[in-house]
Length: 125
Image: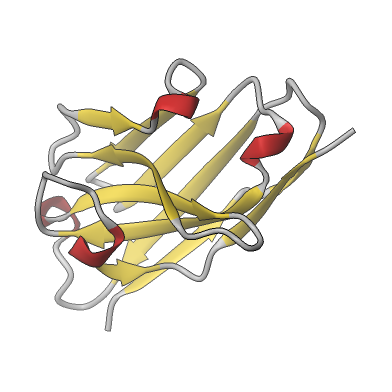
């Protein structure tokens, strides 16, 4: 069984930073065979793509509103993916989910097979 476990969420003031981490595990799960992504879901809104990274980490993708502020990275030796979030804004408040998928295209929620339980990020003064 595949498990994705997020950590690092919390309450931060506008302009602050947080680093989210996601640890993947599973007896037959080959982390480097999956593209990884972060999605978020705010109350009353649909889950949306935030950032994605290809199998080896050479290609990264970002939703327009987070470009220049968020950075996604992965460590295939440790089966982890991270999201560094800087210059946080109140509109970044959401539950953030880590996800694993097979295809380096689209980055739609329907294309991801495995999901974490989510971690809350709240940006407020």
